[in-house]
Length: 183
Image (cartoon, rainbow, N blue to C red; front, side):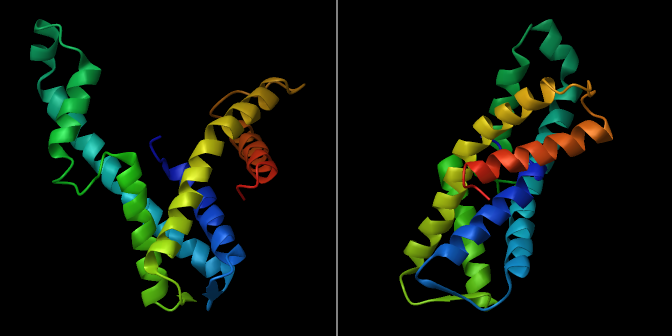
């Protein structure tokens, strides 16, 4: 699953929750500070992929006539171009490796900046964070679908994209994540 900016805060909160509940991690800063730093690191990674996607779109827009002339599959060209440029933008397209790298970056930052302390191996802490990311991703789609169904059945019809819709969807989505133990 591709991470989006709107996932960053929820995912950061899940990571923080798992760090707090861990028996082998000592927190040295408050929950909010840890969540903010996790979110910042996640957003930096997401932003790299957004910039990569923008560059791929520019390249393909410049080749639009050729793409139409040859009746080429745009999605396939997008993916092939993205794979070619991924290293230049420091984006790992293998989700498992990418989430492992993000977990490592979060662990390194939190430890080096004295947000957390631990006496177990780095790998245990990195795996705790990576597992939090994996659990969030598995629960995300289901929570998203349930929130969407609830909002669809509201007495008052809400229009997607409006401020009311976004606020209510976010609240319902958070409730579903909490029910699943992801927040």
